Length: 481
Image (cartoon, rainbow, N blue to C red):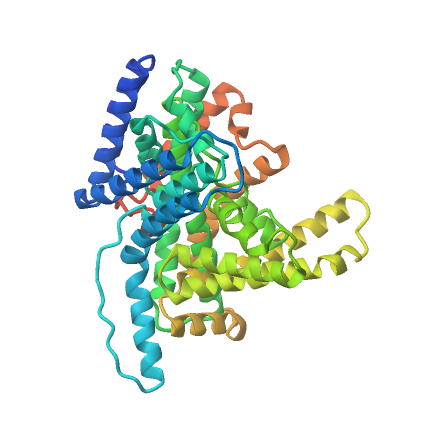
């Protein structure tokens, strides 16, 4: 059931009506939400309901066993053993369904490279939708209980809702227990500001997905399906794909947050103008924020240690980003993508003392010019690394990256091509809004304009849907992760 489908529109309308009518009856409302969430997930493949139920029960039981009500430290070996059950169960589910075939195939190829012909058996199982999100969410909860940052939830219906809450189930944000769990205990009032802002987020998210991302996808798909590339094709494919990825994923997040808001729930902000940055670390602080925060809190600090040396800090950065790349998919291009970003962040961190000694521009216009020059360079580096994310093979990655730097000739036909027009038309739709949000420091800048102008904006969005919308029902990109 895709967010950009009539099926979801009908489903959400019914759920919203029931949740609103039962807003003061917390237990009944939570049961309605749980049944709705399991129905939503079951629409993908009912067989995977057993996996999410198993993950829920394992972490519910582990957290209950860990929460002894005492504040003593350190934890007993028994508690560490219970935590390891949760870690092994969640990472085991991920390993079997997402990574086993990748590592088995890589091992087979590696053995063949040294002359050993051993065929490692493959499982060939279907990847369950959202498995990387809900396993990380439940695992993070159990770790927080182990660290005594939260108490274990006693009500299994509330906890099951925390795991399976349908707006964020299949592609995040990856929520924390101290943020989302208490919201299932609250008696809801109708807050028309939340309803209205939630409806706007849904409309804006659908616009980014149906009008922008799906049109940009036609350009990116055409470039990456070609057998030969010019330099302009390669860069244009990178532009198209990076904006497609942003509009697709942030569009999903907007719809998820908007749907939750209309029901009275607040989800974590997952994007914060990630292209208005001057370095890679800042980009990852603004892109898929919940994933970066998860790896920071549950892996990076552990890898860096309490008193990290520079070398250990660089190791922690590079290994964290490599794991983030691997989290995205079981393929070497994702590993390379994460590794390159890790080296980039570590390199920037190492150069920071030298960069700070550089003379700073004086005067506002010079500072602005210097800032936007850094944004321009960082943006193009992000475009280049996005080719690693999108490439379907090592050979394609080599060819298209080579074209970016060696085949930069420009012809009149390229300048007036439909692909170029599509990409820059889509960017022209969204970039002014983002610039306004950046300078006004307000993600909801839309609500600052007078009501008549807001009505005009809604009308223009409706026209854009009708004129340029791609209603083929394409899945959101992050559903595959």
